Image (cartoon, helix red, strand yellow):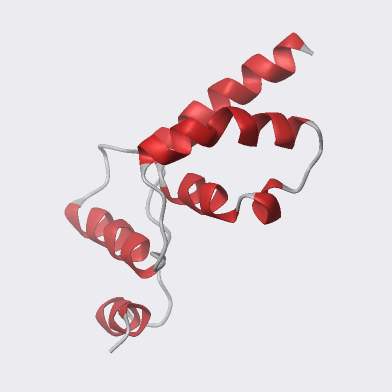
Length: 100
């Protein structure tokens, strides 16, 4: 059974979005978030360290108007999944746009 099928069977076909708060989520919401992340994993993934090494380049390309999701899809996927790396990206982006 594929992970997505397992998730759908476990939580039903319509998943509720987890709350946006970090620590206020109840255990069921945390489990749903974890299972959703597991279902979105790919065979090839980047670690936080690998994304951090590419984040400057990714941010500069985005600032130039490039389609970074197509140019660096593994970085984009990781940012979609990882709150910590996404926060780093937001900070870099605000610095870059603030300097422009």
